[in-house]
Length: 259
Image (tube, rainbow, N blue to C red; front, top):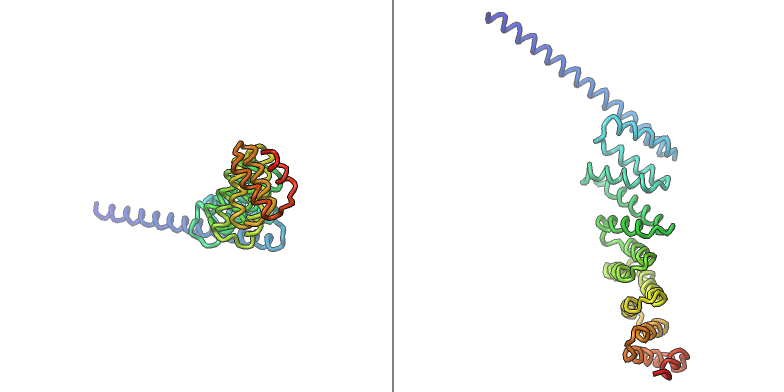
């Protein structure tokens, strides 16, 4: 009996060993196939054959849905094509699977920024806001992103949120976009006034005057906004500031005569 059990156990051990060996071989074969497909896709990417490159990466994903490198390279290919929604989807998946890899976050961020900029350019302001807000979770100190999200808010006529975005961009230093951020405060104030949003106009223009305290146009517009909002006292004070800068400013003189 003991001999039979020993023989049976030996046979079972051999079967297990064979199964393990076959599984290992299958794993090696799959990994070799994935490696080959990734190499082909990367070569096609380097040749700017982005559609063909994507096809290779999609095959890899089909074979191993957790293979984050395939999502990463698919995102790069879609970015190169300007296919922003696909770039964002693949970049996000790569980030979910490998959040600590140093190559993943920059690609995902690039996809979000590109998608936000494209949406802003084409007047899809709500989409642009959403994408830039998501981008800023990854890169909170990016002044250009704050500038663009502010512009998108202006496109929606959400002047308070626009003010917050421009102010945040300036608070982070402003970088190369500093003058653009300041100018958008002025433009936003003028837009708010034209839209009948006088309090919002005042807030934007007051923020602008922190950076350009001698700007005649800003004082004229803030004075008119106070006037239209019913605060004639502050309107006259603002017009007095205008006349200090330019004693012959006709619009200010006309309002002063109307008091």
